Length: 146
Image 1: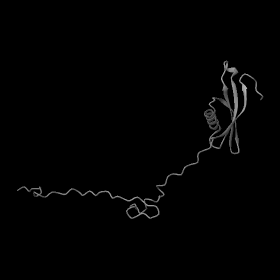
Image 2: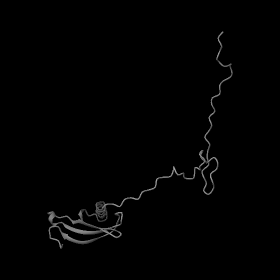
Image 3: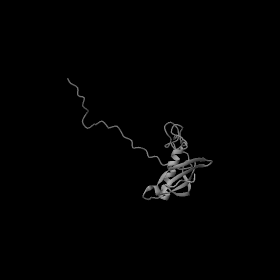
């Protein structure tokens, strides 16, 4: 005779019980974490662990002279609205940089009669503009004092 594997009527297998996630109250400053707030490895969730700490920020390398000169020309354009013709000099100082930037003050036709100006720009160690001044103005086609 065949045996029946079915369960008696009226009885049913219970589904596995699902537990609702526990709500952990936010950590309050000045008190140690409760047992619920502790991790299973025994460390507190609020205290930084050695493995979980963020990497240390590395110091940015000092900018190269070409980067400082380009930044100075860009910032001078922003401040004066005058397009840089080129950088004519750069010098490292005790607390930063001194950069000479040649700009077109007034455009003329023909362009050999443009009025140019030489600006001296002071920048900090990282190349941030600290100040500038116009050193001289001259016509493009005339020989300089140099």
